[in-house]
Length: 435
Image 1 (cartoon, helix red, strand yellow):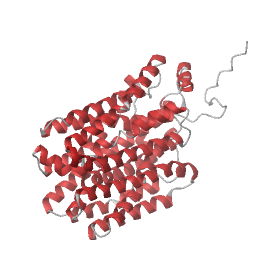
Image 2 (cartoon, one colour):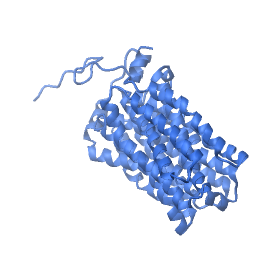
Image 3 (tube, helix red, strand yellow):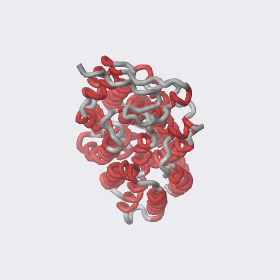
Image 4 (cartoon, helix red, strand yellow):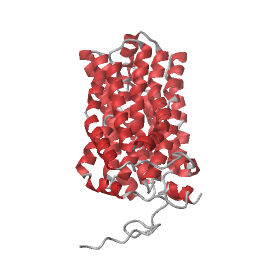
């Protein structure tokens, strides 16, 4: 009978190398090792299952937000509302992603990361399907909030699930996840307006609820399976405590906030900017789809770039230049070269998959990943939620896009500062351990 392996000494990883400190180490002198059932669970989950689960959850975390912009005019007409409700609707994704996302790690401590994701996708599917059945504005907004809240839970918890999974490596699952987010957003932008032209805006929006249902079986199975084996997958207590002491975490939150603000302004208002410049609804939706589709390139590239590049400064500087140039084009000649402005803004949007990939690339331990994700995304989305609402108010007050676009151009300054600060390969775990 073979001898049992020697236990791993405290402070060492299973391969014998020094183990990097987790947030448990920052607060206590005796970190708790994962239980043996947890190790067994992770070893027996196949890479194929992880890939399928990641694809299905990723493509369903954005269409609920990106599908609204191309048919915003039809929604407000159908609900009998004006620009005020339209502004709330465009700002709702950032607000829900911020408020609910801040509670996601606490939810995971109680029910587990995987179960939290399963509950989130259930809420997303239910909200998207039910909101298509009402013509009352406040009910539509409430059900939209339910759907977006479910997506918010997934936003925060999926990176931690990926970091904890043994097949994630440095690139594979983060690349799939970032790409899936962009693909989902692109499909929501590209398909909603054409479908709405054929069957109406409410059925077009309901379509994304049906898509969300496809992710439910595998995540429900994973949640049942993992909870039946062990409950020991939850991140440690006090999920956001001291995380803001990391300068890298603060810069990541700033970069995520500014980029998310631009993303949700573009989701909500870019088609309308193009429509007001003379483009047809389908052409305006196509420009937004082109912008988000170009982001797929960034989602595929940036995890590998982060893993192989000692410094991301040239990339971050180019994102800033593209952001300024894209908005300048929208301000001066929106209908002249609409595809060029969309592509420039899409390239600047590479900052989004870069930040998402950094949640795993700039952490060593999945508990720290959960805390970082639970700080960066909620803080970022709460700040980002102001953007679409403010743009709507300014547009309604001035009956012009000049002031809103100039305001968006001014945000290049904090965008550039944050991008340059996170360019260096620094681990958040290390910053917290030396704090």
